[in-house]
Image 1: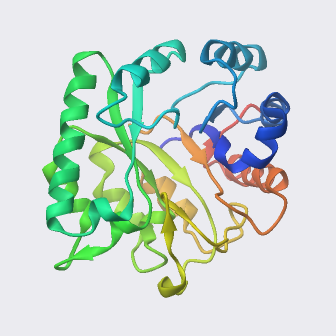
Image 2 (image 1 turned 180 degrees about the vertical axis):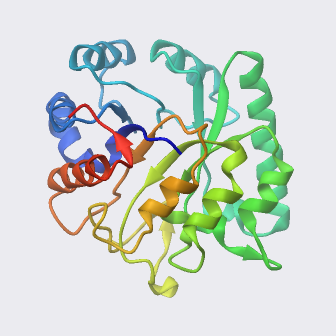
Length: 266
């Protein structure tokens, strides 16, 4: 894949954002990031948020606000329109991929949403966590889901796709390349005791060992090389980190751009 624009998932900076969201956006722009992916607008109107980004020279290639469900598609489309996006995100929890029946129900729901959004000019994409990359009868649950849900596109979180080191991120990026439009990049310790990990609302309830990009176990070079040209942007996301998050996001920007893995403004 040729280098793509580098964005940051603003969930990474949520603790600062709840106090001064505009200051966070200014810092991200000063670091050199080309764009942002919001996860909540912290009481800023979508139109105002879009205007702030324009003033700072920041792009928005995707948003995690709000997550689509069968009851809020109108709201999702209105917000996406204001933000000047043609994509809308969805995602699920462990129970939605628990077994084959759950996967079938989830795929049916997602397909219906994708079809409705498509009629209105929007593309539905899905963000994964680790549980989709567990195995069922020897197959990745997400592979089964992909076959059952042919219209959804993917934002592959390469780190989560390893399922705590049990799977290969590079191979998984290849498996979903034909429908991947965005790429999330984390770094950290891959081999972790799954027995100690529990998910709450799609997030781990303990601080796992995540680190600035380039300082952990992830084969970032391999992932970038395996990613398809259809990827619109590479998005840095650190749910937690072993150092100050602003510093970690800055270090991640430097690593990704200096190694030619993504494009920044500096």
